[in-house]
Image 1 (tube, rainbow, N blue to C red):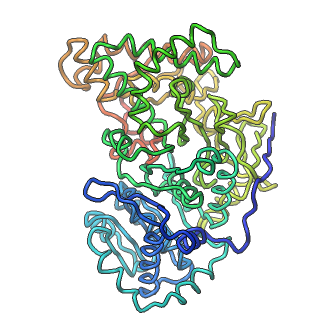
Image 2 (image 1 turned 90 degrees about the horizontal axis):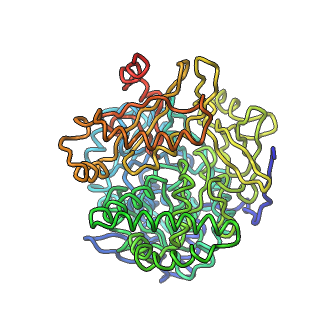
Image 3 (image 1 turned 90 degrees about the vertical axis):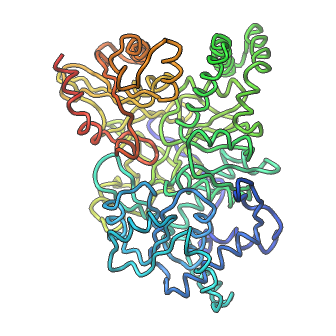
Length: 596
C-alpha cells in the first residue's frame, strides 16, 4: 500500500485555544484533581481551581513584566509542576513558549535565545541562570529561576485584573503560535519548529477520541507520571492530552533507577515513555531474578509471555502455553506489574523502536505497550497502534484526520493539522520540508501494510552504502542488538567500507551482574577486549544478523569503554544516537575495525 488516510473523529473550533479546558474546568469542577505535586517526598493533590490559580497568577505577572502577544519566552528546566504552570501562563497571555533542554550547552542556549528573539526566560536553577547569563542576548529583558524567583514574581501581577487577563487570553486564536521547539537534531544546527494551538489541540483530541480513548476517556480515574523532558514534543503532547482529557498529571524529574521505584508510589494508570525505560524495567527484573538464583525461571517466564502474546495474534493460545502462563502469572508477572505501579495496563512508547520481543513480552505479562511514530515537526505522533488493534512491530495506523504516504524512494510522508506550519525564520528549509501537495517529508523510510499500519525501516539520510554498493538500513540491526541486556547502545557503521561493523556500549548495571557471575574483576574499560564479554555480545550480533542478508550482516564489532550519553554529546535528549558525533569521537576505533 502506498497511502492510507484515517478520517477525523472530532473537529477543532476556530475559536479554541490551549487554555480553554483548564479555565472552564476550574469554573465547573473546582475541586476535581488535575495534578499531583511532589512535596517533601509526598504526593499532594492539586485541584483544577488551584492549578488555574497558579497559572493565572503567573500570567498576570508576565503581563506586568511587559510580555506581549506573540513574544517568545524561553523555559529551561527538568520536568516538574512549575514547568506546566509557566507553560500555560505563557499561553494565557498569547505568548510563545520556547523550551530549552536543561542539559543544553551555553552555545546551544545562545543559539536558541538569539534565533527566537526571546524576551524573557524561566530556568530551574542558579546554575542554569549562569549558563543563560553567559550568552545573554540583547532581546532578553527578564530572567527568572524556579528555585529563587517564583515566590517574588507571583505577586507582581496582583494589580492586573481578572478582566484584563481574560481579554488577553481570549485574544489568542487557534492558529496562533503556541511554541517554538528547536529540534535537538542528530545532525546540523537546530531549527525552530513553529507549532500552533491548533496543532496541539488537533493531535490531543484525535487521540482522545481515537486510539487513546480506552486509556483516558473510558477510565474512571486516569493518571500518568510524566518523566520525559517537557522540552521534548512527546512529553509536551502528553501534558496537553492529559489535561484536555481531564486526567491527573504527575511530574518526576528523572529517568534514572529511582523512577521505577516511584511508579509504585504514584501508581499511574498508564505510562508514556521511550523504549529505554521499558528495557530498564525488563533488565532490572532479569538481574534481580538471576541474583536470587531464579534466572532460569525468569527466562522460561519471559519465553512463555512472548509465546502467549504471539499466540494472541493468531486467535488461539495452545493449552500448554495457557497453563505455563497461568503459573508464571503468579510467580513472575505479578511482581513485574507491581514494579510498574500495579495500577497500569497500558503504555505508549515513542522516540525510537521498541522491538518486537519487548512488545510481545510486556503484552504477554498483561501490560500492553502500543508504539507510535512522530517527530517534533508533527507535534509528536502521526501514527499509533490502539489497545484493541495492536500490531506489534509496527508503529500503527495514521491518527484520525491524518494521512501517511510512502514516496517512490521509500520515504514516509505525512499530512494533517498536527504538522507544523514551518521553521522559524527559515523559508528555504520550510519549502524543502514539504511536497508540492503539502505532505511533510519525514526523512524516515518505511512501508504500509494492507491495513495501513506503518513500519519504520530506517532514516533516509542514515542509509549506509557499502563500498560494494549495498544499501543497508542500520535500525533493524541496532534494535536487535540493544535488546540484549548487556548492551546499552549500538551504532552500525560501514559507509563506503567493504563490510558492515558496529560500535557497542555496555550497560553498567548489567555489567556489574555479569562480572560477578563470571568471576571477573575490573571496569568496562578493563574488560572491553575480554573474550567472554565479547562472546556475549557476539550472540547479540548473531541474533541481529538473522534479520538481514549476509551482505548486510555485521562482520565485526568493537566494545567501547564509555557509553553514549547526552553529557558527551552522543545522544539527543530523546536518546537517539547522534551519528555524526559518534563517528567523530570514536573515529579511531572505527578505523581500527577496518584496519584489522
